[in-house]
Length: 259
Image (cartoon, rainbow, N blue to C red; front, side, top):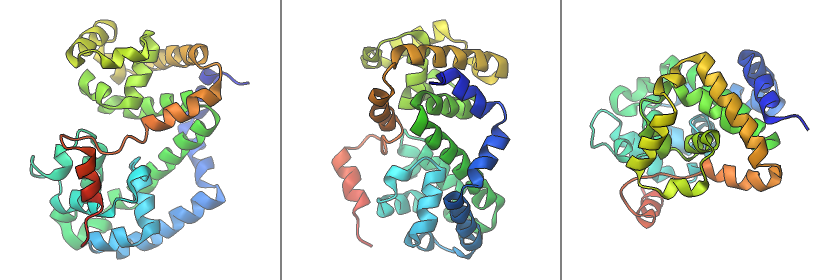
């Protein structure tokens, strides 16, 4: 069995070639073609959410496949946009929703929204990277985590962002040899301990980041000798649903709203 480190290196060292191979897969190629041919015809939020194939493509591109069913919830995200600090997307601690609203900013740009590169090829690029990571996870969940951390690293501004993301925090805990129970410690104390052992600037330095992920992948193999045991656990890290200061029940009510 190929080690997590070797598998990660094979995928990441020539990421453009790896993504190109993903894009050439028949199912992926057809989905990309459909998206590019049709997204320019979308003029409204409802146009987007009513075309399941387009909507699910866009949601997957932003790592939100698990919320594709929640059309009304996502329509609320898009209707309020991101310009107001009190906008719905900005109240969610999971920043994927704000990123989705930033990409599909109907609030600010109306019918012109889908004419921009970021909503056309930009979404395709995100979709291909997301597909690569998911497929890597089918073989080795540690590789998926490493690729995800690598992609997100240059967007991390503080350790609270890491702790708010279950997948990122899993990488850090594994790298530092911390038990799962560490996640239950007071968050300020978690930040204090992590910041004592990892320099935030490490994440912006490709060489240092590479060393960190080499350590992570090596320790991952030690901690997860039975890969099947890890699959369901890691899948949960990427399917956490919206996180905000309201109850899960209320979130579901929003998702089920009738128009």
